[in-house]
Amino acid sequence: MSASGPPRALPSPTFCIIPWVHAFGDERGRLRPCCMTLGDTERVLENTDPAGRPLTVYDPGSLEAGWNTPFMRTLRRDMLEGRRPPVCRRCFEEEDLHIRSYRQDSNETFEAHIDRAVAATAPDGSAPIDLVCSADFRLGNACNLKCRMCSPISTKLLIPEWQQLFDVPDGHPELEALRAVDWFDGDAFWANCQARLPTLERLHFAGGEPMIITRMLDFLQQAIDEGHAHHIQLSYVTNLTTLPERVTALWPAFKGVTLTASLDGHAPVNSFIRYPSKWDRIDAHLARLQRDPAAFNCTKVTVNTTVQAYNVLSLTELFEYLFTRHAPHVVVYPRLTLLTWPSCFSVQVLPPALKALAAARLRTFVARWEGRWPDTSGELDRFRQAIDGVIAHMEAADRTAELAEFARRTAVYDRSRGQQARVTLPDLAPALDLAASATVD
Image: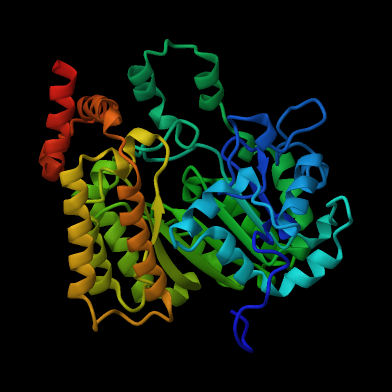
């Protein structure tokens, strides 16, 4: 929101500043508008070269080559003229559920850039790359976890289990390509990043798991050495299972650092979903950040929770933990992200009785905390709207036909990891029983 009053009027109801000011590379190094945009299934939804090949962040000069492609020009024109671009469907779906979207957050974050960006846009949708002040890079699929709802695109540790899930033989070209992802170790990518340093205001890393990528830390040292760190706000999405000591020598040189911890449940629930994470390590890292934020120059720690069938019945336990242990120093109202893929893990697969139980628990939690919410500068309204959005989404469709696939994948992961869903998540037993009976019938 503007310091002088309410938010300024946007150029159109569907406008998003991101395609003017932001560079994004996904886990495979593909150049896309942002982390929320859809792609992969339809080439029309991807930023490609004239031959139809996806553009990357790691080829020499690729950021410049991909900035004013037909794809990007059309995207900007759609936004200026009030159309909802198909590639941006996820944000608009969230907004329709009254969940605050990445588009809305970005328009607020980069509000000061909107007039300049629009004025610099040519009639065909072209815009100068010097407008770029923000970058977000998913540093491949090197990760120390293998979350149940994830895929080898984001963690190569899942490849053996995906071979079991889908009966894929050794040597399958797509999985072998994912096993070999290493573009983030190449000099060309970091040279592309270096070229953008003079105008960068925000630099975001995710993964995979960015905290295990040594080249990322080396690049931070380069930004410091070249005198650019002071004008760059760093941010990360991390599973918070590791917090390298080296960051205490690097992060204080930057304008500030914010962390988003990916937590999908409290204690055993998080360890079950985000295997093989250890809750005591995550809790210790949160406590250290809370105890000594100056050592990390960490101005904000928040939480992102992927709402799914595995955790919707126990979300309130995570909320209670955040509210009672880490308020007010950690921003306790997590962003709730609806899982839509793989659809068999969506909250919509649950049978009606479990949906009703999950909704009742969330509503009871809200009522119990009424009047004693932690004070974190306006985050409460967004959080409560997100809870309402989760319930509305859960009840909007019946995907119980996918329960059998949910149960099948659960069983494969349980066997592979020595876990038992019925023990860790006993509330899910009726759903698993229903899937089993349907399979027998």
